[in-house]
Amino acid sequence: MSRSGVGLAAECIPAFEELKLGKKTKYIIYKLGDGNKSINVEKTSDDGDYDNFLAQFPENDCRYAVYDFEYSLGGGEGQRSKICFYTWSPDNAPVKAKMIYSSSKDALRRALAGIHAEIQGTDFSEVAHETVLEKVSKGAGNR
Image (tube, rainbow, N blue to C red; front, side, top):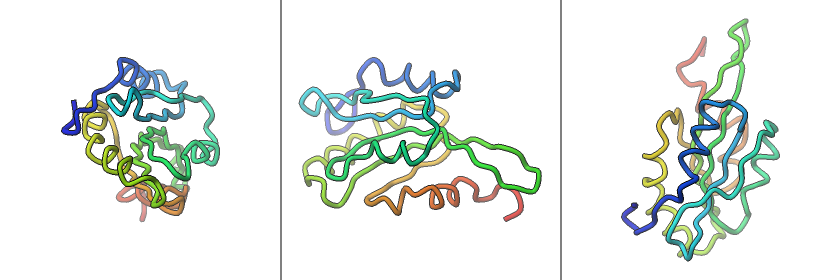
């Protein structure tokens, strides 16, 4: 339970474990439901297209998401993968929604063991592929 009184729906952790261990799920979108009393799974997908993932973020509302971000550093390093946790809180979302999502984030984030990076976005430039790639590849390879 978060400090805002929001709890996790039963499907939140199993969906994440499937993404982390099963490697079939590519991303999970979470949203507040039940009158802002619980965090629920809104959608899971095996679609690895990053633009399709970003299209799930509403322009006027908040969401949480987990994405299995795959990338290559080049130079024969091969493919790498980092599980990223996203907090989406666009500037034009209602203030109440931004406050509830902000104060409820830790309840979900702490329950998801194995997150490698946290991405916070208030507009699409902050969650763009290049921005996230820069964050997850820091300290890896020959930078």
